[in-house]
Length: 274
Image 1 (cartoon, one colour):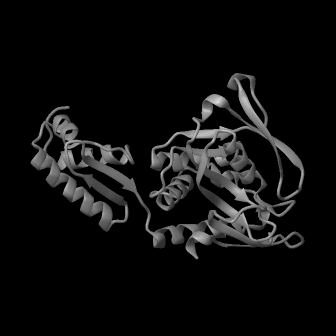
Image 2 (image 1 turned 180 degrees about the horizontal axis):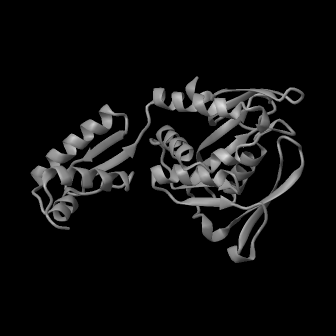
Image 3 (image 1 turned 45 degrees about the vertical axis):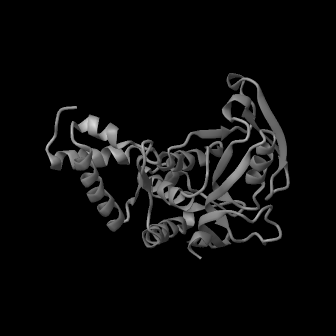
């Protein structure tokens, strides 16, 4: 790269960091990239760090020593997250979204890049301090959420399938009981998709009784993997706590009431904001 003026260097360096979250970048790499002294790079990083923190964009962690450098950690302030979620809740309360069984139509929102970008950053903020190797979700509606979160955590995504595909090769399949309708269903994961003893963050779009998430947890046991956390976009508040198959999860929104006759719903911020 050609030598840049400081103003241009600050812009390019900021973009470089934003595109590589949770990645340790050495001062030497920056110095070589911009043909500048390490002292100048350090001053630039101090400016970027201050702006990131003042504007709630995230944190810039500095690691000292020969193997040190800087690492950008995307964050979203809780007050900002709450404002965004309240707006999402208003959209989810539209009567035409009510589906049989007390579910909500959310596919259009899951297809909006701006919404997924915000939700992904929220989950990345919530689980930023966890040791995570991979993000897991089940096909299909959880996929946009998982990839949005993975973008800000800089992690790979593993997708659990409802049935085994020949193109996936050898797979592990389990039967699980759907928590909401008590039906036995199947899910599978290719053996090559997940390393043993991985630390896994589970992301799902809708949580009712939790049968699907519990199924993924059971599947992880077959890989000797551990659950590093569970993030849910919307949870149903109409399920009694004793009916839910597990308790340790973080939700961004909560469906508290559904009137199937009037199509009136109530959606409020989830337990992350309590």
